[in-house]
Image (cartoon, rainbow, N blue to C red; front, side):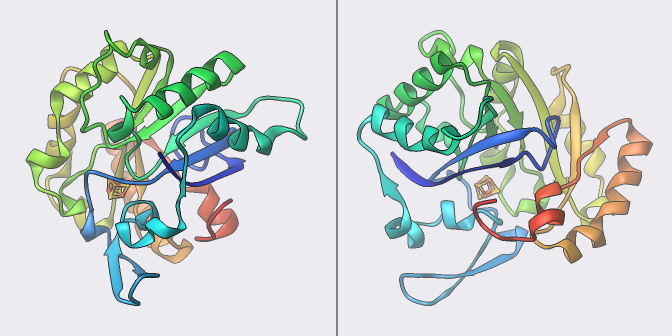
Length: 252
Ligand code: SF4
């Protein structure tokens, strides 16, 4: 397992925005979402890389910066070192990349087992394109899922980004689940409502929409249009509080 970073902060997005959270980011993703347009410089060869704001946890160009773990106990010990000086348990938020590509991995599963028995409320930030076998891996029934299913503005083809069986399985079998869609002004001029309706079909769970942007200025550009879209359609608006507080700094 490759750990990209872990840090204590507040949840900036979605249903639990504002809640103290311990973030654990794992490396690797099954999508690339190039159309999100965030630019990074490759530490490998200095080339320009384009993708989402978590590209440093997606692209193999950053792999030398990730920390490899072959033991769940060692991984868990490192992660809980962040909470040794506080007297409460924050939410434990598993993110990436796409954490569900590792869902059967024994180190990853062992880590989740340790976290749940320690008393953490565990949440996944996922693109929900990987189907979980909830019968064989029943620990996932005790976990909450924020399903950030990608829309066409990600640049990914429909067949790669939308897996309805995976989505409906998570909605039906997990401890709790909600949707979080990333929207921008341009996309709101298309029939994105239809895209969302297609994805949420058969799932009776909350829906959040959030403005696209890695920096405050980009978020402000999209925010009011997304908020109005939410009001019109009965969806919940989600800000990106961490960006308002800390900009695009990593590790907060
Ligand atoms: S699925 Fe998420 S982590 Fe993966 S490339 Fe897309 S936005 Fe980034």
